[in-house]
Length: 203
Picture (cartoon, rainbow, N blue to C red):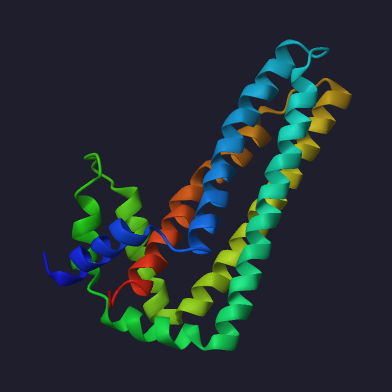
């Protein structure tokens, strides 16, 4: 390994992940967590339609939507802040200097072995996108992704409410919407690690 991966990890060990990116990543980890709890609540509501799980599911939909709204707001705020400060240009320059192979190798040390290391592939994609299109463009894409997750939540809730009205179980929407939510941390909790490498590249 070269120096970059060790230097970035030393900075993380000393300072942790920087906000607001740490908070943004946590929001997208909760996106998946809410989906897990929603599936359980929906399953329980189907088994006991008059039980408390119906209200639990609706409350979880509310919390899931509020969490995504907070993520979207945070991203808009930091985008405006970086626009004003010129930070995007700094990050673009650092992206050109990042040794992706070296930093990826350091990240890989703590991972459990799997033939498809999805976390590493996501990191490498993110850095490649930033290099090709610019760091700000990456987060414009991310903002659209969060908006799509919001629409996914709206669709899922509408399907659940329609199911409650009709009595006809809609398993497919739950499968599709849950999968979309479960994928979120591999994109947007990972992206806090992506940008941390740039922010801490020079120590």
